[in-house]
Length: 201
Ligand SMILES: Cc1cc2nc3c(=O)[nH]c(=O)nc-3n(C[C@H](O)[C@H](O)[C@H](O)COP(=O)(O)O)c2cc1C
Image 1: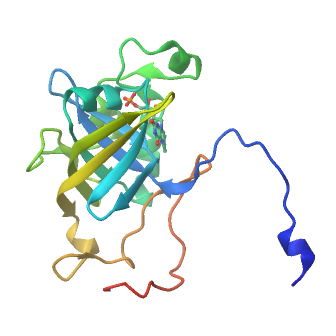
Image 2: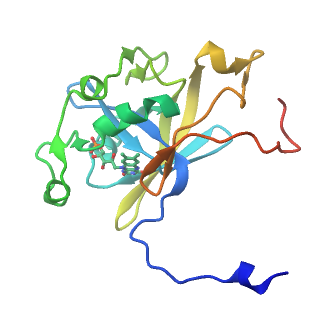
């Protein structure tokens, strides 16, 4: 093995967003309108989905008051809509540290992102019609660290656009691509490389 293949360089990156799907997280505001928060810190295990949320944002404030949400998964085609929401927070007043990094208050997130609300079946916050996968979920647990909250949710309903569904209950991985947030740049998936021995499709 060529020794140089194992060479590394020690770096101190400001962020470690190494490529995870973008989620548009819908939560319920105090007046029952809906806030949309773009996030990329999430992972799923079975029907549980864990979210990482900054403590200064509207999403965690809303989830503490009303423990339901919709986890909307945008496709790569929606990246510019996601980015239209990026400079906004539903927090009023805007926390100083957020204002200092260019954030401003926006209540009408559906309008700001160019999205369409669709009523949910099992939770109060509405879904985002344009997102090919929409997961209604309840909050089971919130753990607060010094800097952020780890929110454990459980899926109650999974909605998918018919064109990415295979048979009755599978997402067609050849037709669905998440929108990947890769060190603050947006990407879709490349060509398939292969599949897991547990794949059912
Ligand atoms: C693509 C993308 C990914 C983001 N990922 C996260 C994340 O995982 N967790 C988080 O708290 N904020 C994340 N942010 C920042 C939030 O979107 C930002 O704090 C926003 O103001 C949250 O809105 P809210 O205050 O109305 O909840 C991300 C932003 C973008 C554009």
